[in-house]
Amino acid sequence: MERRALGRPAIVLAAVAAALVGTLVPGTAHADPIIANGALLARPVAADGSRILDFTIEDDRHLRMSVYSAAMDKPVTVTVQRPADTSAPRPTLYLLSGADGGEGTANWDARTPQALEFLSTKDVNVVQPIGGAFSYYTDWRAPDPQLGVNKWQTFFNKELPPLIDGALGTNGLNAIAGLSTSGTSVLQLPIAAPGLYRAAAAYSGCAQISDTIGYSFVNLAVGLWGGGNTDNMYGPEGDPMWAANDPYLNAEQLRGVELFISSGSGLPGPYETLNGPFTPPGVGGLVNQALLGGLIEAGVNYCSHNLQSKLNALGIPATYDFPPTGTHSWGYWLDALIASWPVLARGLELPA
Image 1 (cartoon, rainbow, N blue to C red):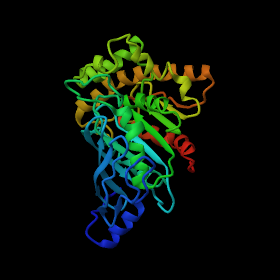
Image 2: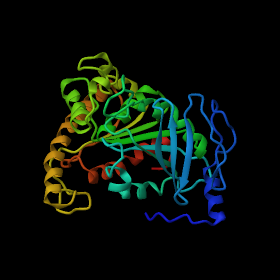
Image 3: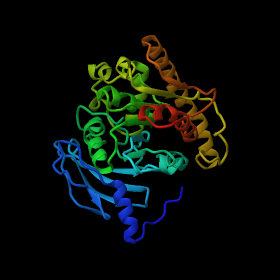
């Protein structure tokens, strides 16, 4: 999907602005449209202090916002893809990246532009945050010397949605999807804010974080890869905060959410090809994806099947996608996102 330069014609700016304007929800300090004629008319401040600092219109479907998080006392970049049809208020899909928070090249735009192309035909606002590397998008109990202050659960559940709803004029229906570490987050967030997300899709995530295996997975991502200390996240192993934030243990609270759970077996599949479209370049990239990606995926596949057993025991329906092959890599996550759309659409009250 080619992104065109916006240029200067006022008619284009006016058309884009007309599609973006909306009225802020109750609790914000300003009730007039935020965006009109290509300009930010107001800098509304929500009751909690969060606000939209600025925005850039990239083209007639895409914009980039700077959103101030009061909880973390910093701006967060948020990209938005507008719906195919903006003639009526539309729902929102929050689409999360993996461990690096989309800060590098490990994000949907860079690695699988086909995902945004697929969603561009849907009547949905697609909102992607950039930031929160190795944070698991949760609220940490203490600042971390390496990763700083992390209050991402507050950001996603309290700060960002009302600003998005007001700026884009949404209909208030939300879904959330994420991969790898965010495959855990997209199950935690609906549990922490009942009713906020109508659907959740977890691609290659591990729901169980408080047992030895799950705790080890979190430490691998946060500690070994991110340089953070999970003691600052939920405390030392065995601290009650781990169980309190464990989606597997708290699965009963997912009742009523449309759920899609996906993971591969870890065995090489169609995307483990030399110089393939979703394979890192060279022999080394292929080997890394097949071996390391295979080991990681085999681990999260174990978690996914455990979650399936737990949800079945609770009588909570979900849609599962467990192909016989597949590593921890982008080609399979693209397939999973497309496969999950009917579930997400059901929660958003959209056609499948």
